[in-house]
Length: 300
Image (cartoon, rainbow, N blue to C red; front, side):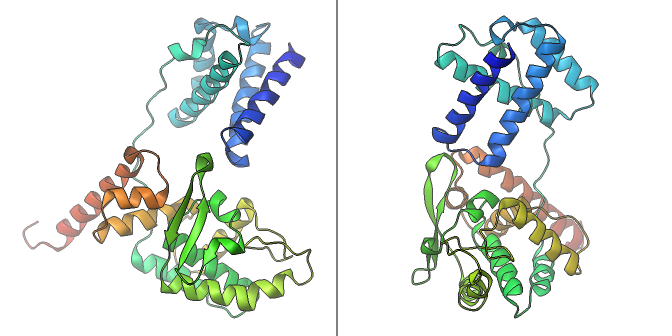
């Protein structure tokens, strides 16, 4: 069984890479979830993926809940396995998909975390430095806030993807979908300063490449490297709280809607395939308005 399922998993990963064009981070999550289920199959003496039944999946779900996993984590694992079995069904390696019978538990509804204007200013102040790394960090932060791009999209940006004349970037998004996103004067100036006075200094002792953002050695900046940089910016600022790259994406969308942007425009800028993915930000803006009202109206 081990050799057989490993071949199936290898083919599934190739499908995610080539046909779905998923990021390495996303593919890693799928692989981790599928391998975890393989371990469960071994524990239950299930000889192969064809032999998995609905009852087996119910036992697996019970095991996950016994491990105190959050509903969101359980839902992700089931979704990964459903996709894996759907792929096997398409390739005629199995005859039915028992995971279609399993309902994914609803995740807790949480409003996206975002930064207020004054909090963003604290982060920008922490980046003010004329060093090559300081210029890079400011350009990185300004671009995230100006465009709302994902971390994976940012790490793949090339120099040629930046159009300073039109003040736009070409972003290669999920599912091989490209989109152009405009950026403002602050991001324009920060990017220009970084490319002219920071990037050249960082890559001079490294093999030449065209990636926009580079690490301290001059090599392409990875998604992990971006997270490390953002944590350092937070540590150097006066802001007290947590940060993750998606908070900047949430901030971008929330601030646009708060200032009158329409939902369809925000959807296109974010690269969301469905409007429902963008609509969660209306809840954020409505909550923001409610709090502002309660804080400032004399008879609230």
